[in-house]
Length: 21
Image 1 (tube, rainbow, N blue to C red):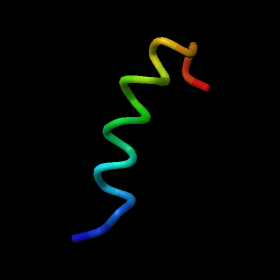
Image 2 (image 1 turned 120 degrees about the vertical axis):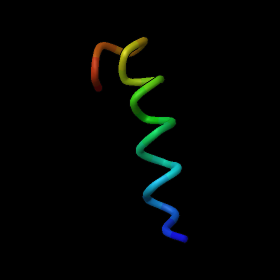
Image 3 (image 1 turned 90 degrees about the vertical axis):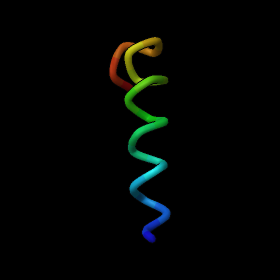
Image 4 (image 1 turned 135 degrees about the horizontal axis):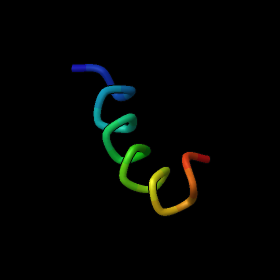
């Protein structure tokens, strides 16, 4: 289990709201 895997999934959702920041 990698902590980067779930973090990337959460970043995609927030990135879309933040404009792919």
